[in-house]
Amino acid sequence: MVLQEHLTERNGSLFIEGVNSLELVREFGTPLFVTSSARVVSNYRRIHRAFSSKRTRFRIHYALKANSNLAVLRLLKREGASADCSSIPEIYFATFAGYRPEEILYSGNYNSDEELKFALESGVTINLDDGPLLNRLVRFGKPEIISFRINPGVGKGGFAGITTAGPAAKFGMREREAIAAYRTAAKLGIKRFGMHMMTGSNILDCNYFGMITGRLMKVASDVSRELGISFDFIDIGGGFGIPYGPSENELDITHTAELVVNAFEEALSSNSGIGNPELVIEPGRYIVGDSTVLLSSVTHVKRSYSTFVGCDAGMNVLLRPALYGAYHEVLIANAMTRRAKSRVNITGQICENTDIIARNRMLASARSGDILAILNAGAYGFSMGSRYNGRPLAAEVMIIGGRAELTREREGFAEMLSRQRVPPSLL
Ligand SMILES: Cc1ncc(COP(=O)(O)O)c(C=O)c1O
Image (cartoon, rainbow, N blue to C red; front, side, top):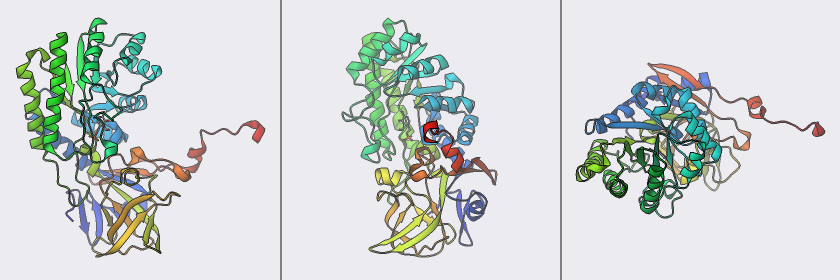
């Protein structure tokens, strides 16, 4: 297999941005997420260049849900990114990392009153998932600008679980509800508007992005014609995919941007009422997905009905394979040149039979003490991690200028108990 530019093999061992993965394991232990800052930056610059070279009124809101490690947030802030937050804690993380309120878009769903109030008071731009939420929001004050999430009736995703539009999706609103929502907003005296969609994740088909942008622009055009309002921004969401499996190809981001911008600007030229909105995208996976390797120790190999390679990174550390059947490439970091011999299942130490990292995978024969490198673990990796079976959250390291910096300490057992209280009657 061809390794990404930040991964190299030297004397049979895996190096990440020039740093020996085995030394990282010695210093920080496993399971360990290792992020290449160079790769995060090059991914960001590639997608930014692809779009900004075609439309200058363009902005990236990085989707924190993919990976909200503060070092990643700082790195992207330095690159000029804005932030896309899905929850109040994510607004807090982004603010802590230095993003100003006007650089933060908050797209919650099924929000509580407390969340709406917090978002309003923090001054971030609010994107509502349903029209009636506006009536609840304005009880706390009138926002300067409001955006609504559209469900354009179709979606697409790497798996059914990450398809976030279409009639079965819980997100967004239809055009008729959107018109009613913007009408209410205009009546309330709100003067500035955005429009948003997010129709699915890990999409590798350029044409889809052009098509779906056209759909959103039609809704924007209809809303603007009906109500005489223009838009400050139109946000087509994230969803830009990366190849995980050997049969998948890279998304042609230059062509994708071309198709999106063409559909966007065609709608602007046929209806000047929309105004001259900023084109916004919210990539998560595209920026961080392939930047991170998850290093894990092989703890035991069992040969029974089939072979199970057990390691210390199971579904508690990387949930995607168990949740969606997602594919992650796995290498033996200390024996990169050992030949793949037989098919094995790679599993963690969790007491669930869904605890799987790779099923029926060709792998070189692994032994206890080997180090597995699970690739493309940067998006929805740590951020979906759990403490199930009483296992602490993993540690994270970032390679910056050839140096490994610990960006998240491994959780301690005492920390895991620190919020619990034993009632005095049980002491
Ligand atoms: C509203 C919103 N924006 C952006 C994203 C990021 O998606 P991706 O990582 O596929 O780019 C998501 C992911 O679910 C999302 O829900």
